[in-house]
Image 1 (cartoon, rainbow, N blue to C red):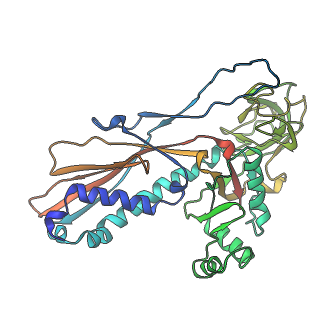
Image 2 (image 1 turned 45 degrees about the vertical axis):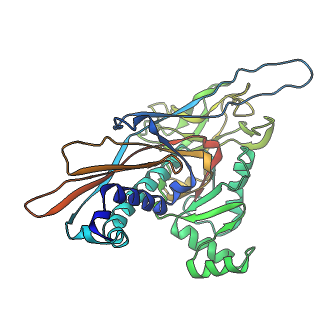
Image 3 (image 1 turned 180 degrees about the vertical axis):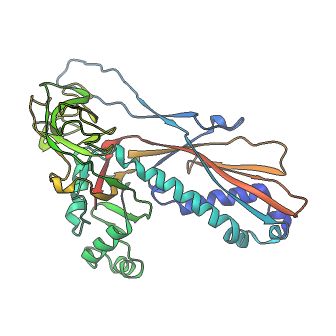
Length: 406
């Protein structure tokens, strides 16, 4: 193509298309593009609000029982501005768009896509459902099916939008274990040719090198609840090793004896312990006491009910994995999830003046926005430029996701 076709608008729109194609985890989740910043541009710290649907109890019988439609929102802070800076010559602008993409755009966008995916996968720390054994790569489909059970019990829709994202070693292990099972001939061929699972067990399976790792806290002691009937987002405990600087890491999963998971629709006791995630690091004091901030909060009645009952005094607390040998284990955290579990918000960055040229490309259908700014150096006859994306991640509905330890 002639040089005149490689305008800033053409290049920026091609960069957006390339970004969409190179994203992995991010392509599988909810994405929100906020166009309210389209005129002036957004900056770090701006907030986008994403709506969550209301929950209802329902009624039995003829009598009308109107419930308040409490529509909650999740505030997504645009806290990350990431980009890649590159430079090309006036001669490079004479390239065709395909050659220009391969030489300049694709390598830069690949780095941006990896950063966005990696930040999104770190949201596992806010997910409380968990399966698998820390330090052991799952080698049977049952582990993944149990993640599906967690989603089923949380009323995750069966609408073809469930996915599993796993690390390279998780993929290699499960593909080897299941090669040839429950697949069409062309899918089996893909397993051998590409080492990928495709669709199985109610999920679309994907590998992402950016799957994050978690270190299980050092634990210590025999932790118990300290006080009966506790509710809310904090649980008071005792029985820990005294004066320990750290007992639980943020993202550790715990269970409390007698506090069971309930079905989302009928709120019936499912007979299995509810998973809770520690939302901050936890240390014990000189008496071995510690307060654990948890999610979900303990709510025992109403439309927001989360568990079957509040814990009794002295209820045993176990850390996910149920063995002290898992303490300090570093474990990759695969994820099984419905699309609506997580959300990525992006917004338009401002277009500066006084440069050679600047352009933005956004698409509310794909929920992404990217900016390119180009300047000119007369001394070197080169065009330094920058590609930037402003975004923020949030957990929209944590009950629609489950961690898979490896």
